[in-house]
Length: 432
Ligand SMILES: Cc1cc2nc3c(=O)[nH]c(=O)nc-3n(C[C@H](O)[C@H](O)[C@H](O)COP(=O)(O)OP(=O)(O)OC[C@H]3O[C@@H](n4cnc5c(N)ncnc54)[C@H](O)[C@@H]3O)c2cc1C
Image (cartoon, rainbow, N blue to C red; front, top):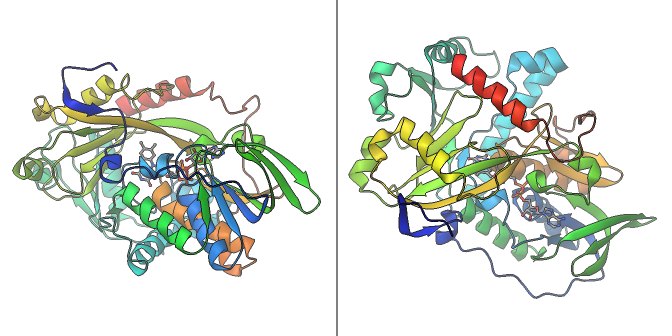
């Protein structure tokens, strides 16, 4: 493997989180002939759905091409916002004010719901309401943040605090930003420990989870589905697709609606507590106002910087993308030049053309996906909603069950438009 001088001797090209929570070993279980509910994908979406159906006594099986949780759910940044990408003005223009309030309101509810779920189930995953520092990458964006704090939409108010550049050292030891906004509600967790707790809970409630079992083809039958997998075929009365950024040819309708976008992360080697305290004294999660966003935080033990961003367009090798990501980190924290990198990894975030998550049913197949980088909270919550919908429960209703889930002409899962879109957004970030 390629090794850079700035990497530590024990450098790994896999998620830092997996050091603390190794991937579950692949189970040798045989595939049953049939099941009531078959769920493709074992991340937060799939497991939350499974938890509902298994608890209600439905025979529930979750399969994954890789180990359980191998996708984004054990490799993300651990920052929880309960926010969706489009703001109120844009959503009002598109859907009207009532729907805009419903969509933003439901995403906010999802954050409270997740906090309650983790606490009630006693999942030990370092869940904390630490707040977010949203840093302005230029003065114009800072003015926008000030306006956002001063003119909150009635019914959607939250605790926001503007921080001027001159006072910013209480949040971050960097001259890169022009002030920022503290969003007190936002939270952080250890994503892999959260996934492990959820996996155990789903299994304890009767769900079966089989890793290394790829769904290869789906046939509709009079009483459900026949799914061909790498371990044989299985009949299922209900089928759920929970593959988000890894949605493939097995469900072509969903694949045409999801754009996989690589997100890249690195972990530094451990530093002294004193040093990380100086770097980010408030201990919040951080992101900035760029469209090609970067995000960072301290590791749960407080000793490392975990830094992420969209530094590459099509690269899926996290070692090759590492120099660009480290450069981005050094632009914000030049004082970390001497700190070595111990881990780098990447994963595919599932984007949608309207930048909203979607759940629903197409050709009898239930789905929830397209969290646009905010999936810890939304994948969990919407996974739970499809589970409830399958059980015919009214609580499964959601504003994200939108009738229109857009695609684009000639789009079949390979985002040919991504490189030019990224260049355009980089240009906007430079000047706006
Ligand atoms: C680097 C990175 C950082 C991120 N940071 C954050 C963050 O800080 N906050 C946040 O809220 N979100 C973040 N996200 C996004 C978040 O992790 C995802 O939105 C969320 O985990 C999606 O969960 P999921 O269950 O829908 O999908 P995933 O966890 O991706 O699971 C999908 C699974 O489907 C499986 N699969 C695909 N096809 C098949 C098939 N044919 N047969 C069987 N299995 C199949 C895959 O192997 C995969 O395991 C980040 C993502 C990445 C990559």
